[in-house]
Length: 404
Image (cartoon, rainbow, N blue to C red; front, side, top):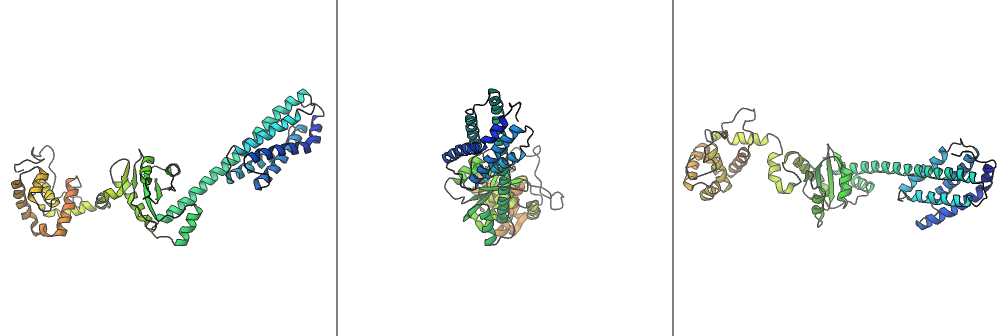
């Protein structure tokens, strides 16, 4: 650290050590007071020890340039960690060190030392202060990173408890919430988001939102989603991201909101924020892959040779609760055309059309089939009802007054 100090300078510095301790501690006390802190607390006592260690190491290095400064660095690395734990800024300790270094230099220039010694001391002193400040910042950032990992762990555990199949006991949930510093709300909504930047999304959303990654997607727990403006703010945070907002539920039912949002993210088309409560029918009918194919195959097995125009007519008739005129308007067809087709349809389905439950199943099956659902039965073989290709479909397929 030192180079070519004139003879006798090291001995002068040793003699000045008590004064150097006092000067630097007075300066540090003043700076800490301006920061609203004192040397009487735990970190203050640590700083006293750090200053004394640092001054002693600096003086000894003047006598022995090869002296090991590792112990001094270690002291300030620990002080940096403590700075983070006590909630201070990353640059607070650097400010203290810089002020102490400057005051030490101001004192040295009054000691009638040779210019060559002052040049060497200045270079060594300010390099030494920078090194100690770097050690403090390193400790601060290490502690910050460790703390972030710890927070992720406790919040992940809390979210896992909320969405697990078996509801946790009240004591276990409260303990997990306390560890995560998360006041338990009365209601929550779970949002599933493409991507794994859970920490960033939670921090951006604010309002007590916590998040973690489960199964390669971010799961956000939104407390009290009914609070005015909360969901609008969330939608703004998630702009440009594909996400699914589960329903607002009681805290004990958080798993339901989680399961719905998770499934919606997987199966529902669309970009941006999907509001599951607005698309429950799609979720119900699409929840289990292949189930609607099976329903369509069974319910439409009686269709026989009916073609797509008849199936479209039956769907419109069911949607309009058996009202021929309303069904004809929906199809842009003549009522007589609808009546003609319904006679053929009744021949195929018979009394089934008079059973409310059967009509509901038929409507769901037709909705699925006409939307382009799978046309095979549960074994994969073609069903009796197939959609005509665009090359063979009549020009009036969209609906005219003529029979199709």
